[in-house]
Every structure is written in structure tokens, then in C-alpha cells.
Length: 287
Length: 292
Image 1: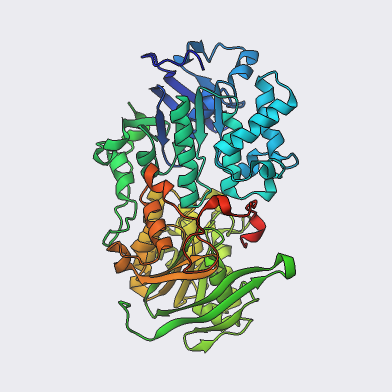
Image 2: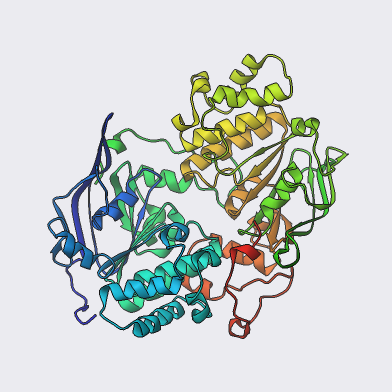
């Protein structure tokens, strides 16, 4: 936490990142050479299914499994070259420096282990502390994600908690090692809209208090525009546009405009929704 | 209140659905009543566990345990539905990855309802309905895994339409789809309704989808309808119940200040929020008391 002074150097710099999957029918290019950088801010990555947004998140943590091939001209996190780092180095980075919240807590939590113990385990993996101390920190973390009765939830199993609470538990687990960068891959898509916003508010406050960087991956353009500082719009493995979230309504790229227009609106006129027309050129080139 | 002053196509009166017994008892639907005029689209909105899908399942006969009165096209419904009911009303489900048989071709999927109802001329009916949902005859001999999510949902709609029903019960028909595909499917549903004079009940958690599609809507929370209103009222931002207002605020996007004002709406419909959270008896929210 000590050297977290504001600096101009980006926390994460990605240049010409490509993720490819060789298959029998030829190479599938999931991410086709994207570049972006991230400071201590909330960066949204938006795209439809298959746009490569999740693969981008996984590639940063080197979690793309074989036969996937990840290449980049540069992929640097806080001065560390993520491509050259050894597996041992990566293990100290994952969780402690960069952590990741997945979409569905049902599949991300261990079903036969009490949730509190899972959170404490995440802490003890990176810190040499006694079990009692880890438990104390886990309870504090549960309180920090606004769980009303941390003692009771600590003892609960994953099937005993609701979706919203499960996602708060996941966030507690990912934040307990105090990472510098959090990658959240559709962390709230499975939740009801009010619960979703409550979970985001917790994330928002923690990111602000701790000065973390956040990559928020989502398909929900409106949510990202209202939650993040900047938005990366992806299509077919390319970045179509990067813009300030508050200027999203004035986005220029036809794909972004198309996505915005095809959303039904509460005060719309109920007429036919404009249908997105996909330009084949978007497949070829991003920015 | 409705834009369609015709006679009611669907009437639901004091519908109650209770699952389980004693400790496991879940009162999933509480005294729900509404009417849908012929040719209208009625929206049921609510969060997960609010009972909105259960209402639809009771209506469609998928859920035989219910009390109250339901009338469709003048016929009072019993616990079991006959074949004639399914000629009248068909359902489209949320997940087109789960609702189509993975080992049946589109042709076989569409043939089944025709065989059950012994309808003549299946060849022409299948080709016609595929055309109507915007899939060409090329799609006829494909398997579901060869189709995109949007195409699968079109097949599911075609399967419902092939019996030429007068009512479609739509359970979150676009929530598994990308927004650009959602727009196409919503446009398709609007066009089919216009062409065939269909009556829809649309269940959704998405207030903007309901505002786009429906004439009237009911907002459900904990099994009860907290408010029934015309979509015009919603569009003027005039919902009366605080729960509806909260849903509206939430569907407009993230606003840090608004989140702090969110209330936890209790089980009693019409009751104000549960008040100070710290005075509540601590409880682990559990899936099992939220209903299926």
C-alpha cells in the first residue's frame, strides 16, 4: 500500500494483444491485436458475446488455457513483463496484485467449504498469518462488503446464500489480499437490477478507498457508461472505440451507435427498434 | 385504462400458488388478479423470486398446484389442460439453449406439435412458419447447435406459432440474447402480433423491454402484485408504488447516490420498507425461501 502514490505511469499497458485458438477448421482469432492502458481508474470493456472481452481479461492473468496462444508486443503490469514472468512469479501476482471476479458465484465458490474459510484461505495464501488473524480479517472483509451478520455468513456454505450475497462473498475474497488491479468479468449479470447496483456501489467504494484499478467486463452498455470512467468497445476481437464514459451518448463509431440505438427505452415510442447492421470492415480493423 | 377495450382474453382472479408444506412452505403467488384484453400485451415485471414466472406456469398448465380462478377465451381452466388449450395458447421460454431438443432437427422440432394436433399439410406449414420468423427453408434440417442464440429463439417462436394459437405466453424471451439480437426478436414479436392479432403475456425483469412491448403491466414483489399500471403512466415516470419507482431508478443505470436510497421491500405488499436494517433479526438470505 505504501508506494501507491499517484503517478503518470499506467498500472497496466497492453499493446497488440492477440489470442488465437488453432482448431481443425483453422485458427479462431478471439482477440486480434488490441492496445489499451489503465491507470487507477474504472475501465469498462463492453461487447457482445464472442467479442473477445472475457479473453482479454483472462489473457492479462495468463489464464488462457491450451491450445490457446497469447501474443503481445507488450503486456506490462506495474513494471512487470507479464509475458516473461515465470509461473512462480505469476502465482504471486494472481490474487495478490491482480485478482479476478467471475460471473457466477455458484461456479466459483467451493461448494463443500464454508465461505468464510474460503475467504480466509485467500488471505493466508499470500500472507503468513495465524488462522485466527486470517479469520478476523475475513470477518472484517465480509463487513466491508456490507454483509449484515458476518459471523453467521462466515459459517454458511455457498448453497445457503443468495446470488447477491454470493457475489459479495466473491468480491470479499478477491479484495482481501488487497490487489492493485481487479478484473471483474460480468460480476453482476446474474443479479437482480437493484442488487446489481448495490454490489457495484460496494465495488465502487472499495476501488476509490484503496486506489485500485478496475477492469469491468460487461455486455451492458448503459451500466458501464454510468459506472466506469472510460469505456472500451469491442467487436470481433477488435477495439472499435475507446471513449470517456460520460461521452458515450455522443460516441461516433457506427457499431457503438448501433448498440445504443437497439436498446429499448422506457420512454421510447414502442415502434420498431433499429436493428444493428454489421459492417464487414469492422471484422478487419479496429483502432 | 387499456388501449384495447375489447373483451378479456385472459382473466386471472385471486391466483394463489403454494409450494411445499410446513417449514418448507413457500407462498409463491399471493392473490394475483389481472385481465388481458384480446390483442393486448400484458407485462409481468419483478425481480427473481417475485413469482412472475410462476403465474405464467400456472396459466400454461405447467404448474398444476394453484387455487383461484383463471379464464382463457371464455373457458374456465381446471387443474389439467386439454389439447384444445394448447391450440389456443403456447409458450416461449427464456433459454433457447435449453428449450430445444439438442438431437432433433428444426424440422422434427416443428413437426411434433403438428403430429400431436393432427394438422394437415405439415410440409407447407413448416416452410411458412420458418419464413414468418425470418428463417429461410435452409434452416429446416439443421440441429440447434448449428444455430446462433437468436436463431434458436426464432425456432422456439416458430414452434409456438405453428399451431396458430391466439395467445403467446413469453417467459423472458430475450434475456439470454445480446442486445442487437434482442432488438430483432422484439421486432419479430411485434410484427407477428400485428399480423395475427395475438394476445401476449410477457414476463420480464427488464422494465425497458416491458415498456417497449406492453400496453399494461403488473409489478410483482414477493408473490404479490404491488402495482398495476398502464405503460403510458410508466413512460410519464408516474408509478405510484415506491417499489416500482425504485425499479425505474435502478433500470436507468448506476448512480452512487441513488443506491444509498434503495429500500428493502418486505413481504407485505404496499408496506413501506423494512426500515432500519440494523434492527432486523439477522438472516442469511437463502435460495430456499425465495421460491423457485
